[in-house]
Amino acid sequence: MLREAKDLKVISRRKPNDPERRVDQYRIVFERYPHPAWVLDRATLRFLAVNDAAVSKYLYSRDEFLRMSYLDIHLPEDASTVQRSLINGQPNSPGIGLWRHKKKSGDLFDVEAAWIPVPFDRVPAILLTADSTHRSLRRLLQETESGRERLEALSRRLVDIQETERSEIARELHDEVGQLLTGLKLMLSADEREPQPGLAGSRREQMLQIVNELMDRTRNISMDLRPPMLDQLGLLSALVWHFERFTEQTRIRVSFSHVGADSRFPRPVETAAFRLIQEALTNAARYAGAEVVEVEVQADSKFLKLRVEDRGSGFDQEAARAGRSAGLTGMEERAHLLGGHLTIESSPALGTRLLAELPLRSTAPGVIP
Ligand SMILES: Nc1ncnc2c1ncn2[C@@H]1O[C@H](COP(=O)(O)OP(=O)(O)OP(=O)(O)O)[C@@H](O)[C@H]1O
Ligand SMILES: [Mg+2]
Image (cartoon, rainbow, N blue to C red; front, side):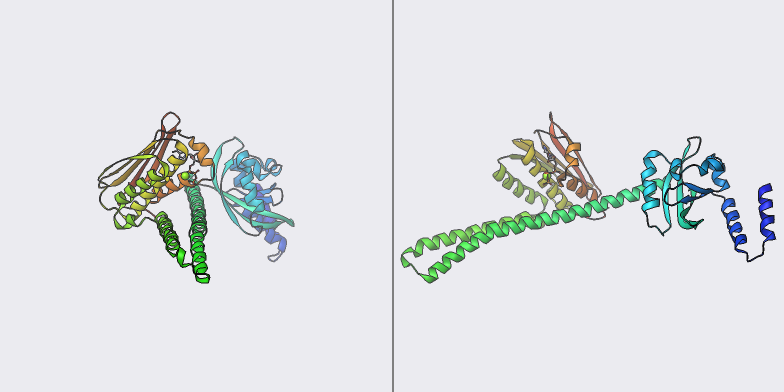
């Protein structure tokens, strides 16, 4: 109180337009500001000035503060984030951080720190204030941030998947369809240059064979992209067709049971269910080493439930997710996007069991095609 009265007297003796007087007034505003506030050296984050609210809240004396750096009122594990935001952030822009501060007593509390660059004694500095904040706000921000990261990861994966699919289709068109068409063209042009009536029958035969093969390959490519029966006849028919083809290609038997699955479901649910089972079967064939895979589909008025189970080698989920593969996370995303969920249980003793529950009345934000 005494010091403030003296300060005011010094100021009142100065002329109204005296720049010194304005500086003094600003200092009083800073010092009387009801929330903790500091001026920090921008390069080192050492405290250059401290207000009364900071001294009474943090329990350090003014002198102690002036021997410390802003990082000293943070936990060591938060220091690099704080340092990055303040030193490497936009040098001339204000900023906000939701951080934890530490009092001299060691007590921790959540704060919303807001700062703005200022010159101070010709040193590039930062004026920073801290308001206590509620845990819920901090959590909300963290959730928003992790939601944003999840969306970014998802869209990166979608682009990856799209590119992989495109290059697979391009390779198949080039290697399979392109080769056969070239063969056919060569035969036709050889015939045109030197007609050999004696060979006409057998060449026709060969050419017909090539045309048949071309039709097969083209059908396969189109089926792999999206089996038309999924749209025309529904999930059950598409699955039965897929299981037959799967067993033909892999020699692995599919033991299929279903309840209530012979009606039609919303298109996004049918697509997700088909793709989930398709990926689970591909994984079983590639890695499980099992002879049989069980697939069960159950539908009631609310959910479509899927189970795909093999008694194969099983796997360590943490290690599998650490890799760059997209199958497991893609299945999870498909279920989440429909408002459903997916669980995977796997162990060397039991093999792998995948359970998915997809709601039939959608509350979903979207769907992967
Ligand atoms: N049924 C299973 N049995 C044994 N191991 C499995 C099974 N399913 C998945 N895995 C393991 O989990 C890993 C991750 O599977 P995921 O489907 O995510 O990727 P991927 O099949 O390797 O590649 P992608 O699906 O992206 O082509 C696999 O590499 C495999 O080691
Ligand atoms: Mg896979």
